[in-house]
Length: 245
Image (cartoon, rainbow, N blue to C red; front, side):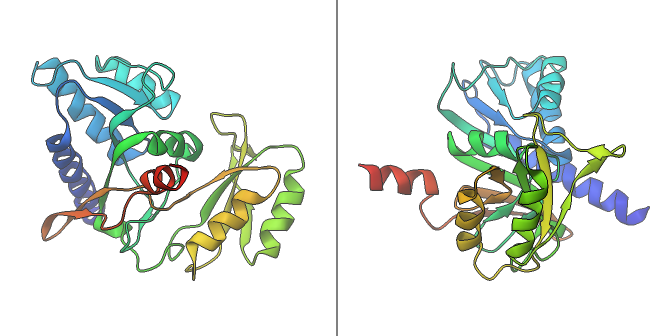
């Protein structure tokens, strides 16, 4: 119980620190997960108190949309606001380059769409999420269309993973997009970028939980306090814009 209480305390610290990055008038991406939920609740309190004004949020899941509405946070969509100022989100793993594994909550597709539309991607975690190499503690979620799912399981197994179809109440778990999720245990990854391209290129695979080159800032709460880590390389969105231009 003591460990659980300490982990909860650290999540609250990370969520509180995230509010220092929020300014009135911002369009905010609202990710998914328990730590993000704490941040959204703090955001709602600041909006209710009038300390933040003209905030609008783009939620990554129906659950987060419901929470935000209940807290009085105005919502919008990417169709109305295609450029997000700041996204607050969590992660299952964070490596030293600030690359991530996400998708434990099942919202990886929408989270990645939002991440790629944001100017600043702020990830808030406790220090248990830090790893030397992605895949060390968490399987890589892969979202697939239901049709032919067994063939995707076999193909992912051929890449050297131990894939498992995510289940809920005895039935395949369905994402908010109506797709299945396969959790793929590859072990610690030698080259996450190569694996990312391999998985994404396969027919029937919609998205995966490797978030590479997307985080600009990571807030880490640990026993020794709060750390703010910043990406030293150009975010992937900006690299692509430079290449396209």
